[in-house]
Length: 276
Image 1 (cartoon, rainbow, N blue to C red):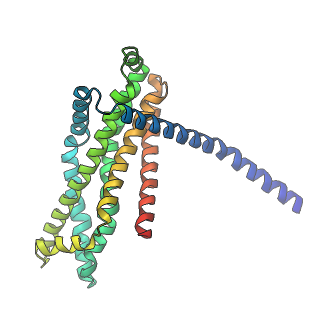
Image 2 (cartoon, helix red, strand yellow):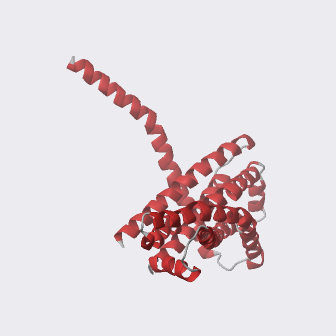
Image 3 (cartoon, rainbow, N blue to C red):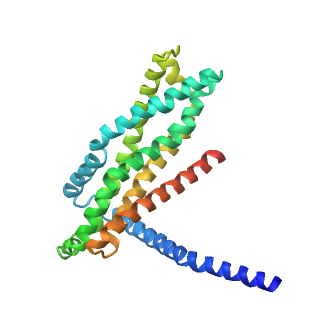
């Protein structure tokens, strides 16, 4: 009986291993290629810094407009909704349980440190990132990237760097915009429901819950989200040869990997907050 159980257990372990081993190997290969692509991008940014600025700077401005300015309405709507749903309800709940003094700490911990950066990053990924993967993947499938190389134009410098820089700046600015709008709408909603605190008292309480460490960590986190999204998008669009039929699959992989990467980076910053 024991031998049968042992044989069954070994067969199950072997079956599970055969199922997950290829996925693990593929994940490690993707991570290695992404790391190599990131190093190539950083090397290009270092060696070509300031070159062709008349061409690159307008492309960066275009990317900021595309992934930042054009998303202000949808981010504004989300900010108003979060202000009513999260901030306003949080203030009301804290008043009901007699813990109004912890309102600022709760808003800073949950919204400013975690929810706002993730929301801004995911909005950029959903509205601009997917379209960018399709754009770059189609260009690669049609041979346009090879045409740039034949003309002596570095695709990393011309196609990748403006997008990475533009996404990074856009996520940082959209996060700040989302925070201010959410806090303002949340205060107005709570004031309409009978909040006695003045705007100065409310925003002073939120500011008092912030520490000096929040500012550099928040800047690094939001910038990291934008850079990760830009790098993963450009990797899947350019680093591998694609056919037109594979562009859709590349887009799906990009979204999944961007979400996982942002969550892992967020976990790292949570550990930093706990250590500090």
